[in-house]
Image (tube, rainbow, N blue to C red; front, side, top):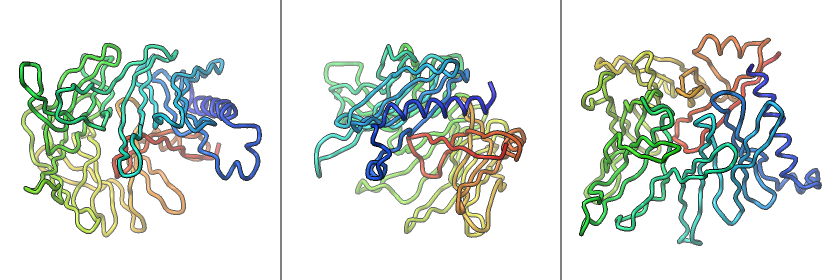
Length: 373
C-alpha cells in the first residue's frame, strides 16, 4: 500500500469520526470557537492496513477507534467521559493489539494530582488488559507514573516491548517476595500474557533510559540528589558498549537559569553505533552524533544560524532515524534518508513521520510534511 493511500485512508476516517463527534450546529461561530480538536492522535498498524485514531467526544471525553482502510470499517475500542480519565494517545504495537495511555486527575484544588496508566486492547475492542505494573499494598509509595514504552522490539520475544516504570521499596515483614529497591527501571512486558521480566535494575537517581530501537538499552541518565533531597543541576549520561559490559561515561548536561549546556542524547543509531542528540552550535542548538566506541568523537548532523534544530524525525517499528526538523515561520523537515528525501521532494506525495521533541513527552506526535504532487 502506498503512503498516499495510507494518508487518504486516515483522512477519510478522520472525517467520518469527526462528523460523528460533532453536533449539527458545529458550524456556528460560537461553537467553533469553543470546539475541541477533532482528532488528537493517529497510529498505523505494522502491516499498514489499519489505523487507530483518538477523537474528542461531544460530552468532553475521548474515543479511540480502529479504522480498516479496505472498506472503511470503524471499530470503537476505548471511550472515556469528561469526568473520568482522558486518552492522551493510542498506538499500534502488534498487528492485532493497540496500547493506549490514560491520564487521570484526582482530588480538587491544592490536593489535585495527576497519574497515568497504560492499557493493551485487541483491535476488536475486547480483551482489555492493564499494561502498567500493579502496585502492591505493601509498597511505601504508589507511583503516579504508569510507565512508558521505549522500544517496540525485544529479542526472542515478538509480543513484548521494553517499558520504563518506577519501583517502590516494600515492607518485608513475613514475606520473601517484597521488593527491596526503589527507582526508575526497565522491564520487558508481554502485551498478551502481561509477563514481566527485569531488564535494568531500579536506580534511584536514574531519570531516563534510551535504547537502540532493536531491544537494547544503550544510554542511561543519572541525576543525583543533594543531602537535602533536591535534584542537583546536572545530569550525567552513561552508555553501554555495543558488545555489552559495564556502563561508561558519555557526558554531562548542566542547567543554569533555565538554560542547558552539554550534549543531550535522545536516541541511538545502531547502524553507526552513535548517540544522536542536541548540543550548542554557534549560539544555537544543533543536532549531533557522538560515537559510542570510547573515542567520544562528535560530528554535526544539522545546524542552523537562525533557529534551533529541536526535533528528531523517526519512522517505523525500529524508530529508525531519518531526519530532523526546525521551526521558522513554519516547521521544516530536513531528511538524512535519501529515499524519504526523494518522497518529500516536489512531485511526490505526503510523508508521515513521528517527531521526537527536545523535551521528553509521553505523547507521540504525528507530523505531516506537505509537498506538491
